[in-house]
Image 1 (tube, helix red, strand yellow):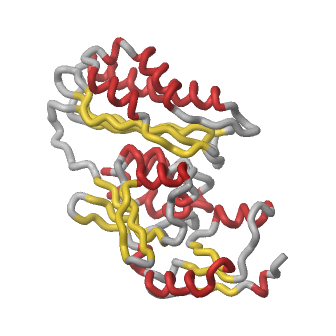
Image 2: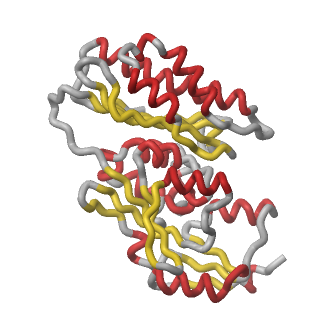
Length: 306
């Protein structure tokens, strides 16, 4: 076991310097920002502690959160607590705002970063990032590269995701500010079920976004589920059925079945795959039922969030 006194912490001032250090130190180093997840692995003995830690905290561009051309551009080292209280996220990227509020304790959120939660490939923010069509900006030997979060997760599942890149920013299209009276209702939701009420990774986490026209048809609906050791995924089969069904609100039991069939949940010591599939289907169809009820009452021009 490596003694703490033998660990060297590097604090590069630029992404380029961090990349050079990563290449020079090779297998004996880890990139860290908040380090909250890595710390749990080291304490549990499930991962070896490296001799070198390359911290991203001193790189200004990776701590920046700004709006650019209708997109929230979030540095990978921005903390969950910063996201939680930032008005751009709270007002116009609410699935992500709801997700970060549900993660760990406030003291952990002050250290944990969006990039760290994301690159674990099973973080609780991933369903929210999938339905908001986030793109990941990576830095590697060939410079910067943008990749949809869904494409990256597919490559992770297949074992084809490159390991020699550094996540530097997350780009999320943000919702335009709606007028008070709008003939189309927009909606979004994020729901999480844990093994207990708070401060624990999700057993199941689901998210959804979309619009509801005056004639009751759904538009641009995106649904996703994840949680625990199950990697998040878009539920495209259920999306297609909802978009093509003029009477979707009367056919929610069929949607429930489609979600169960598509969601590739896994079993762990705490919950079975079947439990996760049923719970994900329950959560999503409950949200759709609530949206249908709002439609039935003639409520439009606002966004409904959980």
